[in-house]
Image 1: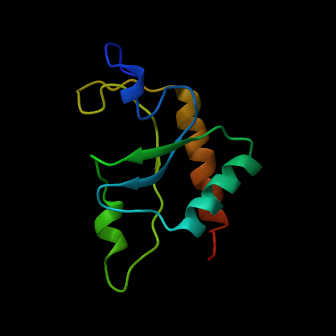
Image 2: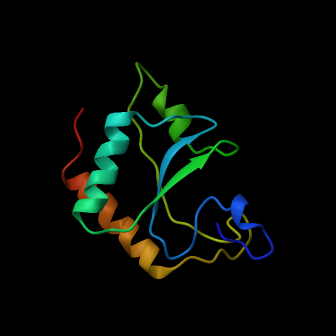
Length: 112
């Protein structure tokens, strides 16, 4: 996130700019139809969002995506400072918007 002391060109996400919709990381590339569906849903709901490319990090989505015959996965993250410390900092509106987006996707899942 936008951590004080870190140059802006190294920021992956920013607080207050909406949930992060992950495009790819070192373990997974989100399928294009699913990424498009998540982005379109955020736009339909008026939810600000950030596209996140994280080539040096990963999530559990990577191993899940290759389980069995393969599972489509999407990742929606909440931007936060100091994420691996005892006290991370996030904006409540980013959390609320992530919840709204995830809830909508669970109630009406995207289809290929």
